[in-house]
Length: 233
Image 1 (cartoon, helix red, strand yellow):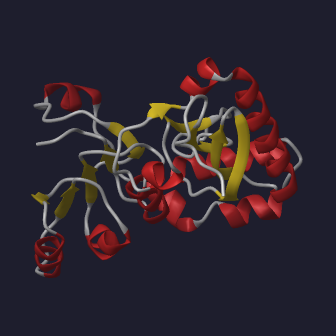
Image 2 (cartoon, rainbow, N blue to C red):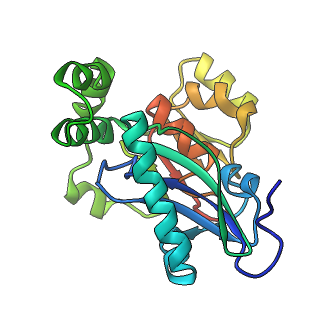
């Protein structure tokens, strides 16, 4: 075992080899000095942007990006990498194909095609009809957005527009959705126990957690507009 909470130059984080929200060709993720992997993934604590690791430990940062590039080449897809740094030494815990928003799915497929990692047939397989349907949904016009009252700020986890009645209890949210109401699920953070309510909701809001938390990952997979880390209340 390795430990991110063992003292100086230690911590844990999640790196996406490219941005899973926008599809930008740039590393994206979060870093938690002195933490363990579950602290980041659960969304129960606030984290730092991944750029903080670059500032604190540039050699570890360089090694992490090099590993991400190699894993992309091997798997021919964007990677979601969990890692730990123990006393200045990088350890990769696991990697998997990254969940992504509809917008990112299109951009990333085209990027990988241009780089020769996938062919035209694979592009068509990766950009699904549901991605196209999501991209064609209505969006909020700038003048409407600017005129609306701002209730809270957080990090975007999955883009989109949603409206509905806010519910903080999972069972209440499921009951309301079952009666045909549009539901916005508002939770301190989410866990696998909340997935059914997330599926039944039009949108999701959490008080804590970042763009690599459980709420963020699941929302991108199921295509629900989500804002995370909005703060208590």
